[in-house]
Length: 315
Figure 1 (cartoon, helix red, strand yellow):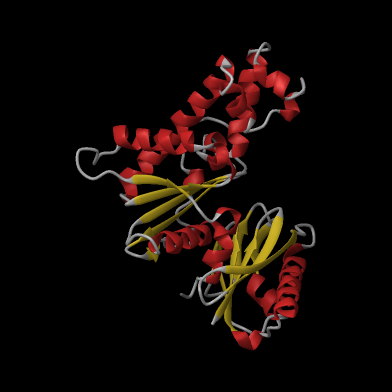
Figure 2 (cartoon, one colour):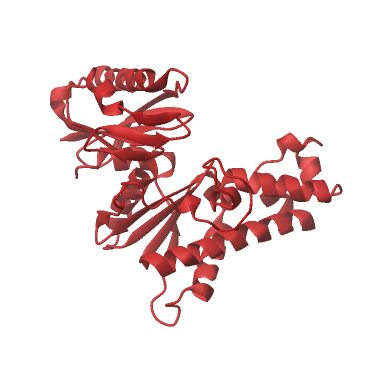
């Protein structure tokens, strides 16, 4: 049996076909039509599926179900996306809209949970693990938790929203409306904000040269590059970033006690330093540091983790 996974994000919607060996054989994507609303997003996802079917010589009879990941909270029983700020969804009937084009069962799940599930199955092919936590450091901070081999979602099917854990009381205003969320400090967006703040205080920083003298060109990659060349201001940026990341991860470990934490997302592409700093923080701050310590590893599926997880929702 082959599997179909849909990863519908705020900027891109991607569909992937997974074969019997659990390998992604084809992926199609396009820009998410947020302004078109739930109807256009559903229609475009179905169009991508049709393109894959045509190219692979398949029909819906070759697929058992379709799994869909979205960046928000869902009610799979009712087929609703309860809230997804990046898609401007509020009680959006995504399953009903998709069912107009897809004659199969459709299962909805939070995209971070899908990514965690995808990474969990990928890791489990190498090592036996039952308690697993994933953090995605991208535009925001996504998270997903596997406890006793099953997705942990909470009674609202919204857990764990680690990115909206309060990290700095009264801190930066988050898009969710609260202040000081972890997302505002450890995401690519948060890292960029910190870099620009510190760059403005240090006009001689190499970050300005790398950005062509324009503050809007300073992003999450800039301080890593500048720090690697000895820039003190950039090092200050990274010190703050790693501090906030470490505080949050230690809290995750003390709450959930996962055997493995895997870190993915664009920020994780900056080399081993991020994994090393995360592991150091957990080694020093975990309540269980005198016994077994949670191990931090880099996610391996990249941007395709959500597709894999969505495809495996009924696995």
